[in-house]
Amino acid sequence: MTRSLPSEAPTVLLVDDDTALADSLALWLERRVHVRVAYSGREALQSFDEEVDLVFLDQNLPGLSGTSVLSELRRQSESVRVVMLTATHHEDLSGIPADEILTKPVDKDALFAAVSEYAAETSGLVLD
Image (cartoon, rainbow, N blue to C red; front, top):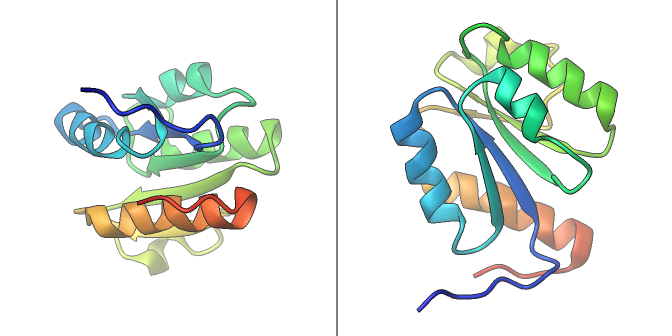
């Protein structure tokens, strides 16, 4: 039986070129939020629209980098929250206008905490 999500549940765009990781995280997240998955920077920009509330964005994407995607997302929407996913140290990303930075391998609890915090701040929705 599929659990239906409340309409006010956030929409998350998950961007990572590691398809197995992206699909695994999406499967886990979709029990709590609406999820879109993109496997490249270009695909992320095509999938992004005003319905997306939160973006989990891999820093090291082939072709269009995570930093380039972040710049374009910020140009399109100042309000979207972006959490950068990186295998490098946070210090290497100083100056990047992400709202939060998570180091890979991504802990599902940290991922869910970012989603829960966003939902609570913006709509008062408590995710379980």
